[in-house]
Length: 303
Image (cartoon, rainbow, N blue to C red):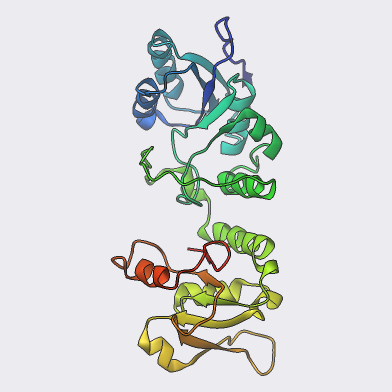
């Protein structure tokens, strides 16, 4: 059963609507709502909460905070449903957007909802007009990385990415988060397919930077046509380089493909990089910078 949303106080629409989907979040809601109250944004702001069939005290906590937020000039709109089963984060976000009024949308999860920061950050800020252009979040429910799919559609429709080096949010990871319903293999599959859709068609050949587990996994995950574009792996590990090649044992081709393994300085760009950042004390980053390559043209980060 759908619960009607609270009507907004009369007045002009807010400049920014904070979009908050909630499901059994009583343990974290006080901290979450306190962060809304303590924002240093000086324009008009509203909080749009949609409760996805919570069975705990989430709604009691939200109602308790409603007066404090409105007393600080932050309008609060509350909606939700009390069906036996939750309908998922994508559905809840879409409903919270629909009942909100702001020209800009700032998505705030009371409990983070995907398999780690799937791209760069686990939250979004965009204009309502752009959200409408990109389209709604996927409402497939449990196990669907709705944030990653939204981001990919954003890129397909011409959206860009701007990196902000300042820390702007707290990422909470805990045992009961919905993140655990999204399988790592699901994220991996979406990322590989998007790589093949958006980047690899423009390269006649490329090198995978990492001859280890992740690089080999990427190679095996590619379609046969994309695999044929891989001219080499590259690495800094002398043991891998001395081996000389990687043989794809599961390939249907005969003879089985044998991909050379080279030192990164002798390998040819473009590179698909399967080395995680900030894990080598800066050594990898220094090696990459020394080649004076252009990101997006000469290399892409996959990990």
